[in-house]
Length: 266
Image (tube, rainbow, N blue to C red):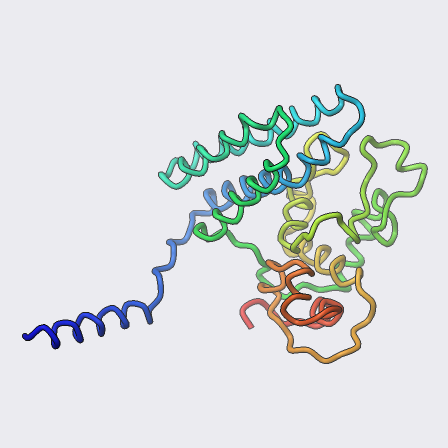
């Protein structure tokens, strides 16, 4: 075979390989998937709450809150050690690096912790979506039963008498401070908040019921839809915050997309 033919053959092999795309990561065992998801949830909470902890006015309270977040990182390391794969060991080294920094004032810590989450979700096939299309009406009913007493009937905050009983008081979860995706809110509903009044609903509500509540809240924060948009699958919606939806589909798109959507995989 001459040089020209060899180059053409190599180009054909390369192009065929590229058209197939990168091989998919093997499916996780249920135990490993649950462990990875808990790791992600712990890192999400640390990334959000570290800076909030630094802004508290009472130094002993700041120290206590940072210690609580450090405990979350220790729990994540224990889960990664239990998984026991080379990739888990690599992530654990990154988590331990964050753990060494958390006692000080480090305004890049939240961003760096979020970057670890993003890298995990790029390579680990953690399920981040409901198995069935969420039911908004059922989510509204379940929110009233399980959440409204602390977060208010509309999710914007607790009644004054409830707020006095909790430190910190339950937040406005209809308009969270962060650009949460439904998946992130699902994790907080599933695992609760460390050393806060927010309980875990991992046992009290089924995964689908938790997704129903989360999709209800994401829909309720917006006024009724006023323009036609293509429907998205609820698996895609679960992974996107409203900021990303606005960037892709225009301002106010979430009011339509969060109310009228398809089943996962559609």
